[in-house]
Image (cartoon, rainbow, N blue to C red; front, side, top):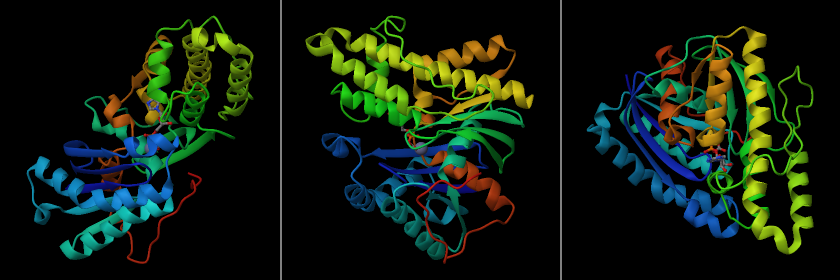
Length: 333
Ligand code: KG4
Ligand code: ZN
């Protein structure tokens, strides 16, 4: 089944063509980062407008790259939530209209389920059941995945998402938005041991996260630096990153041990982080788990992952209705 995937939940307009939920024929991502950069974060109103401008050209490009025409699209999968309502509505309404015009089935899917499926778009997908750490800019949680549409949330952040913490620390260091890539680059020049920031494990037996205390500790440290901040920036970035990574790695490995899963996966925008990838591979394999992490371009927001999860619903005849609407907040899995 050839599925057209569409994603407009935040600041990326994306379209992709995926065959049978596994094989990517094309994946186009048009980022709005350059537009939102100067405001230090995503401006919802601007995002909606830019999605509106980009959705048709991005979709056309995805079909061209895949070498197919509109008539060969067999079904459509589109992000329904969570995300910015105005942004989501652009992709969702477009998908509805297109599905009606082409007379094909369509399904709204959860953005987080999409991230969890990004790992199936690789040559080395995990076997069920597996545990996954999903760390993005809007969410951080650990999932038990028992089947293609069977996701159970084991624990999640009580405050900030891991990516959000990267973005905020970047802002504190005046390095701009989004912060993940900048902080990880800067951290390579720093010593992760020099400044020891607090690790918030909360309860070591549970899978909840908290990053707001760490964010405050980094902020206080920065305030105390005064004129010496410039010299300590790389060490701050490295120390902060190590504190985040330590907790994420511990919780994922612990979840695998607790649930008895052999396979573990790392997904979401933060999964592009080199240090996190390296540590998950190390700790995962050391503990005898099979580790699965998608390439960096599939970690950030994209539409291929949306098509991938949509396939499993559509295959079972589970479709959306024209009266369905988008949602902004996280659904409890
Ligand atoms: O999944 P994603 O593209 O969008 C959401 O669904 O939120 O994740 C974006 C988040 C941002 O907070 C960004 O700073 C973070 O992922 N990120 C990173 C890296 N690349 C992106 N965080 C840490 N290290 C990176 N290399
Ligand atoms: Zn995302």
